Length: 140
Ligand code: CMP
Image 1 (tube, rainbow, N blue to C red):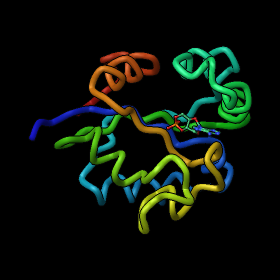
Image 2: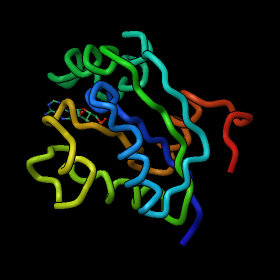
Image 3: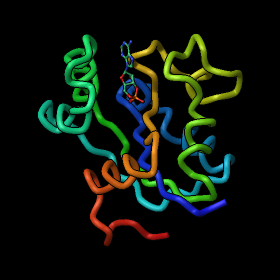
Image 4: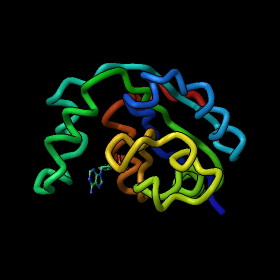
């Protein structure tokens, strides 16, 4: 197993309900160290840039509206197999399909307001981390 870094976002549905602490406890309990974190308000353009890969999808506009509708907490998580480990603790994209005990099963409102985002590959993790963080902001 290798030590990896992954990008995590705590989404506006979660910050609105003051769930940051509970979600961070789930991440840390799963062996993921939060090595960078900031609470920011995404502009519509910054949300569009982040989700550019989905721009042809029917849900793209709603997703960008939602992601810029309130504060998000962007984070870098570090640990053994951090990318897969984070996706396991997040649960399936659709909370109806998420396993018991996962963050999305516990907290997500629906497939769009699904509480957290996590990178899905090492390549995307590197791109997504660089989208929000300078190296100097990440303290392992
Ligand atoms: P996320 O992991 O942030 O990656 C893309 C996001 O698009 C996803 O979580 C959901 O919030 C959203 N999404 C994916 N599929 C759908 C869908 N069918 N309808 C609405 N939103 C979706």
